[in-house]
Length: 339
Ligand code: SER
Image (tube, rainbow, N blue to C red):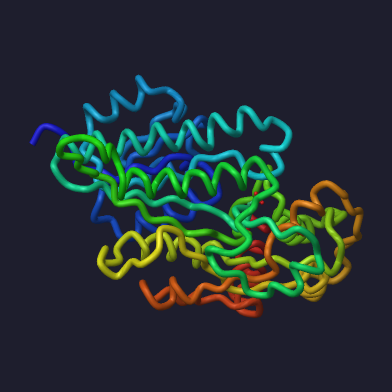
């Protein structure tokens, strides 16, 4: 055996990466290597086999990883989020689309080298949806995977396209070749806004909810950038990480979709504010609506239909709105800032 068998996580230093690395470290049966443009936080460093600082756009680096490691599971988390992508859309396209193409190609070549399909986990997003106006959003209710897929952001376009790209690599790769053999087993979740107690997001448009909580815990005033009635689905990070792991280990024959909605709770911004105020009395949370970011969130569904995930791979979030705050977010965040 020439190459060490490992799991690869890209964008490992991001929010999902933090949760996923800690969770995989508890399992401890597989070595993890990570790739991120920024060095891993020191707490994470000792939980992985090897940390590589570099870009998913660096194909020479990916080639070196291919030569050195046998990868049969990829969590491709690296991406620029929705607000940041509107500031630098071309860079977003490079990272989010070309980067994903590089990783799919990497997975295909890995699979060819060891003769088995590489399981490729891809976090897509509610940003893949685009509802035309708030009235339609209200009427639409729980949106199914194939409805309203007309994203209005660069990030949403990137995510939706990469879902198709993954499907191509898995089901139609080089279809005109004499003997096409796909080695990519592509699996995708469309995440709602994720809320973590241990990290603060950066560059997303669902960030108002986690920002509100973290600011209150730090006793900093916070001006929420969307209207009080704004409603989108959210999920506590541990459920997000569990969703990725459950989908990764689901038997292939059970999977009927390329991309699965997953949801947990969908409070309005005001409902989040009220819960935060109860936990941190005296917190200063006001509203200062940013019309452009508001328009983005207004185009995202108020809720998602996740029957497919529940049926096919038994997705069942542990944290509803109440429990996410009382048992995960508030105690963990309090502890974090006390420390
Ligand atoms: N949280 C992401 C964002 O706001 C949506 O997937 O960009």
